[in-house]
Image (tube, rainbow, N blue to C red; front, side, top):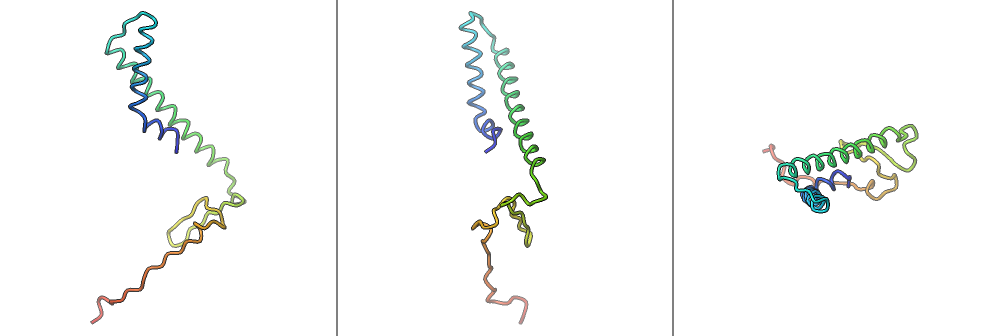
Length: 113
């Protein structure tokens, strides 16, 4: 699971935690923050967290895509496509790469009278 997925899944919790943090800072410092300031500041912080995690996830995936060595096939990793179904990153001897699907033959022939 990507970090940004975890952030999006817990967005409400993060938002409430940021609001509680701002309010706690106000109590400790002896300041009183208005509702509008708390709303705007917490929204900015949550958006910043979301943008940073999305950026980190995208850069990590881009780094992986660039650094992956396609010349030797990646060693034990196999990428193949047969019949429109593609297996990317499945080991050659993996049981998942050995799955075969067969459709039963049609017992009733339509269109022939």
